[in-house]
Image (cartoon, rainbow, N blue to C red; front, side, top):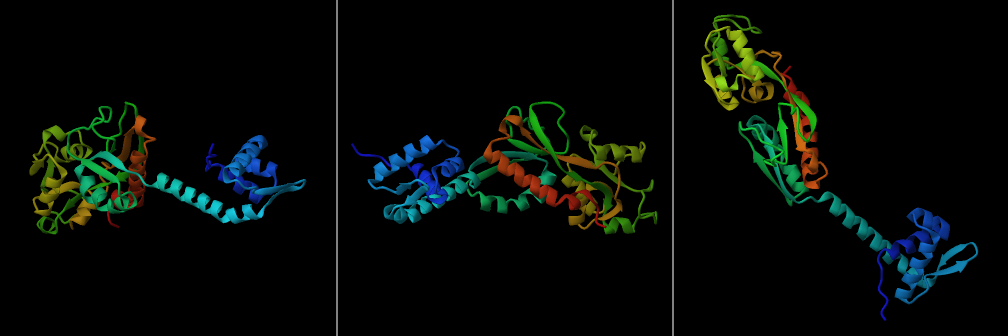
Amino acid sequence: MTNHLHWDDARVFLALARAGTLTRAAKQLGVGTATMIRRLDRLESALGVKLFSRHQNGYFLTDEGQNLLNRAEGLEQAGQAFGATAMHEVAGHVRLATAENLANPVIIPALEPLYEAHPGLTLELITGTQTVNLHRRDADLAVRMVKPTHGNVTLRRIGTLGFGLYGSATYLATRSTTATSSIHESDSLIGWVETHNHLPSAQWITRVLAGRPAKLMTSNLSSQLAAAQAGLGLAVLPHFLARQSGLQCVMPQLGVDQQIWLVMHSDLVHSRRIRVVADYLITHFEKNADSLAHAES
């Protein structure tokens, strides 16, 4: 009957060659001395050679054992490389839900290094005004600016989205007030349609207008940004978006900043494909925390 080689027995061979004694080698591997002897006997039987000479003060490699030492170390290195590959290469599909104003200017431009590190990974980006339900698995994880208050979810605050009041240079040149850090009753404001009155920025505009109508009302932030760029009035915008668009800040602190939350279903926390995307987003948002939270100083 042919004896089969058990690859794990090579670990016993290496440990004993390095430790020199059965007791020390067994302790390094976390097994008993009887297990060590049994595995060594099995390895020598499979190879048909004696690998060690037994002496009262330890185990010493035979010539045959010395000849196999480099090959055994090569097996060890190959196993370590195989394990590292398995741990770091992640493949699969991940569905991420987020707001469009975070997806396009913040997340998408930063994805290339993630794909380079994990070429087998695919990402589905879901944006829009509809609320994505993680419990129904509409998405695997989400980046939100509203903290979930219930449900079987795991969440982490990954930043703050700061807002200020901004206008174009053209509009600011025509203002009837010379004040550069306050708002005047003659200012035109760009606001939100009624269905978005729950937003902190919409509520701030409503308070400031005090019954007056907004110059323009929209249902999305990109339209408000375009309106401000067109010189139609002042808009409450995220600092980083207004800065990228060349708008000028009138009031940098409005008290309407929003926390940015990374949310995932608790059942998916230990999924490697979900975890690698979540960790990447955490690192990216934390690295850009200042530019997202503050106006240009």
